[in-house]
Image (tube, one colour):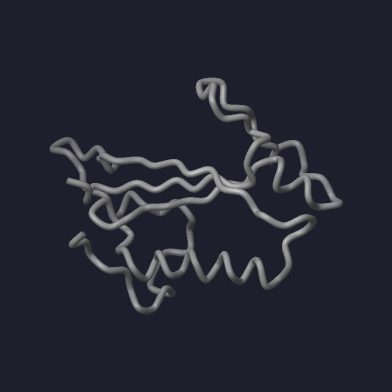
Length: 127
């Protein structure tokens, strides 16, 4: 696909995780237009126990590779990663109540306990 590339220096990106409105198109009334295509991938960490520093670095490197490959925009790619209770169950200390994930009431086929991560991508480039 012919899509805009991300920056060579990721420090150029905003530090906020969901700082997307400034890179999205708007309609005639100034309303932000979200990308047409959304994909939600459910992923698992395939090892037992707590992820190692090396595992975390591997994940960070993979996500940075995506950020280099695609411009952060509706014409490039927007992404976010969420972690499930299953993932956090690997750690000895539990999460405070305010950070605990609520179940998906409108998604019947996926149990919130059946995956470790959810990876959301949004873009306009698919034709």
